[in-house]
Length: 137
Image 1 (cartoon, rainbow, N blue to C red):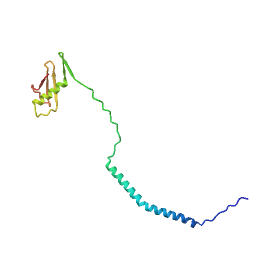
Image 2 (image 1 turned 30 degrees about the horizontal axis):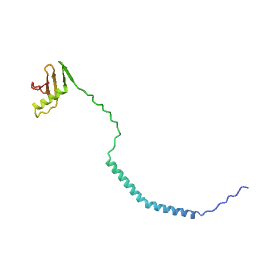
Image 3 (image 1 turned 180 degrees about the horizontal axis):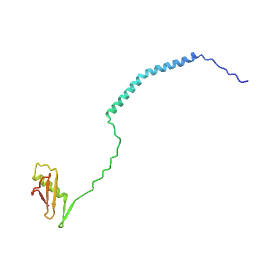
Image 4 (image 1 turned 90 degrees about the vertical axis):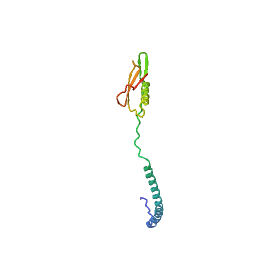
């Protein structure tokens, strides 16, 4: 014969009461904490919203192209055993123009170097060149 199973009757009403009572207490505690949690969540949301307003939207990071350094350059004219540095002649022409034409803005300058005469003529701002607009070197 098979062993007999014994069952115990449990009063479901009594057993459910402690659980209901515990769940009521837990529910009451949760309700009491709910406004605090809501306030805390609201403060966090407000703080996050303010931070988003203050901080500008970041664009995706782009890599800057490496700038190449300009190579050193110098123009030297050799004629008749002499060396003439073009940059020095240009600076002398600018200085000469500023002295002769005070109050006139220098927007552009074209320099014509004649090494056989040791003279550089210049034309400023696209105007007609004046024979007096020259620099000797």
